[in-house]
Length: 533
Ligand code: RAM
Image (cartoon, rainbow, N blue to C red; front, side, top):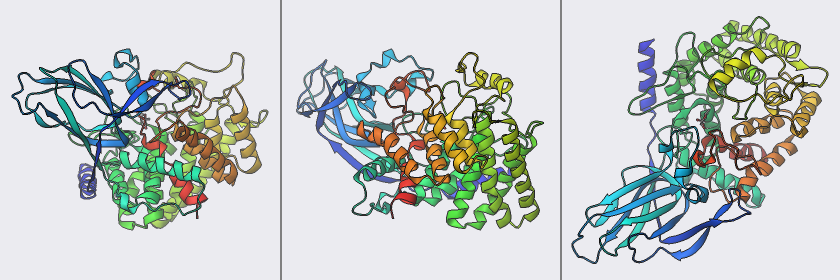
């Protein structure tokens, strides 16, 4: 096993993509002020050039005009005179104006405040100052904490870095609906800035490779930048995490060296990792990589099958994550995780066939049919015509222990109606045709149902509409959901977005959100695959 791990890491290393660099400069200043029409209640307004001379106590915000991920430099000058004492600056970075509108001291979220991008720097020598860290931002707020005499700050620039070769990006054909063009542009910028030495989930925060995000990034990358090498690297990195009897971790670290945490097993993410291998093979026909990775597929699918409960329904690992699915508070997940398992099982059967493992392919077909029947028998509520999560009360306690969420069931209600469960039952092939359409519509329309809060879950909602052949609904949803972020001025798509509810947060404070988030990039995949010819 150790040998395989070394082999997978070696392959991952060989597939490390080169980075591309682009310099972005700015002299433009903005003021960030209250704006009741903006999603987060504030906007950036142009206020001309950055000040020519600054003194202690001055503050200004530089606008780089686009989302940047990279290294920042600036010049400090004092008309050639010896600088008597260091110049002390406070720098704060914002992907969106809201991050600068808020005072970081007011942050009250659940993740460590050190993710908020702020630094105090002391400049001992005048001239060019290069900041060592990589930042993710469009806006840079500079506060002059102390300077021995008025000075000049200028030549603000960012050397942006990405492993996306933007020259490969093919513009959408002339005449494409301008709304789709705008959504595609923002999605492409989102993916570009999350593409580094691996697919990062967000360059502001985490900066990790997560298997759930990887799937959507690889799908979208293929239609935008075609960097299959990066997809391959990420698939090998996860393969190096393979363990007997334990799902893959949901995320891994590349630095300072490859590692991952125990207790991070996420069943639906493991299943979607297997689907990512199927996606990759379908696009590339790369048999060598499939042969390398197929043992991992067998391991993950084997764990899912071996841990089905006595009714043939997926179980959530004890002590680990209860499955992810979405950050919607109170979401009961068993039905959706079972759906993700069925979906992946269906997707990997062609891999077993391609590997010549026909007996295994046959076995998986039978297990798939049994898993669908079990879902109809134990999870479906005939009275309401939907999946209302009545099954999982006992499993929910495990879930709450890991991702604390208060139950949102109505007192006295028979179960929890969620969009997430219907989506995954459609994708798992349990609900089809008109029954699927009705269940989805009912869950979307019910004011009390649990709705998706992440673009990640919205991706699977769109995919469910596509699977049901409802292309109009799929397109309308892309325009309504991602289109709304564009209308709110997003340069890149956000980690969490519920229109009209800016307070919704996975971390108890939207200040911590990543506003250039990997799993939000997938509208380009749908637009370019289905809606533009
Ligand atoms: C967060 C990140 C990441 C996601 C996990 C489940 O930490 O946003 O993208 O995959 O949660």
